[in-house]
Amino acid sequence: MILQRTLKKAISATGVGLHSGERVKLTLNPAAPDTGIVFRRTDLPEPVSVKVHPSLVNDTRLSSTLVSETGVRIGTIEHLMSAFAGLGIDNLLIDVTAAEMPIMDGSAAPFIFLLQSAGIVDQAQPKRFIRVKRVVEVVEGDKWVRLAPHDGFSVELSIEFNHPAFNRAPQTVHIDFANRSYIDEISRARTFGFMHEVEYMRSHGLGRGGNLNNAIVIDDEYVLNPEGLRFPDEFVRHKILDAIGDLYIVGHPLIAAFSGHKSGHALNNKLLRVLLDTPEAWEFVSFSDEHDVPSSFHRLPDVV
Image 1 (cartoon, rainbow, N blue to C red):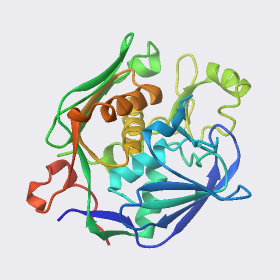
Image 2 (image 1 turned 90 degrees about the vertical axis):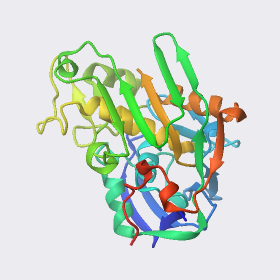
Image 3 (image 1 turned 90 degrees about the horizontal axis):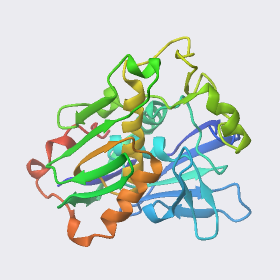
């Protein structure tokens, strides 16, 4: 049987919010089977818990932010959620001391390290997957995203930037996780932004914690980071990292092929809402026999 997963023990990290610039402590705690991913704001007079769900993503300006019914915000969760998806984590209680997750180095790799350092354990309940049974898509102008039936999990994304730094490498990447590794090929890809956007972002209360240590910064022609890029096509790989995190807000791994062009947090979230609003397009499945599990999920790192 393919089982749910949580952490062996609690583990903490401290960092800075990319958009708020606030210092934040993050603590990842084990949680019981069927808990799901729950964030808890411990900096408030009365701690408030918010369970991830697509309907609560109500701010998608440059990130995915949960906003509870009472207005409590849990911001920039997509990189952390991407790490959970990459390691097959089902149940966690995440304590945070601010309204935004720490950006770390701008990728999911520090969160992968944190999770693996705590240890990952199986739980005595079957893992529940969402299997996509028919195509659902969202189209907005020249941007689109789609989920289609697939015996596994794959992602194909393309971006479109008419800029020298982007034109030096392919702007389309296709990864089928049946034979490719999330940790090796996606988790280290960093978020990116343009110098000319910085002033606008900061005037709107965004990007206050951003610097060359936690983002790729691009001027009119070049990448400004002294170390350069981690992959020639790091930009589109980061968009895949984001998409995996955005999709995992549905709370379960998807058995599907995800594809898109010029996708972003808002479009990814709309796709999840359309999926959930189309009951005939999906179903919950569990597997009692490991041999029945699509090979994409055989590559999840082993538990300790």
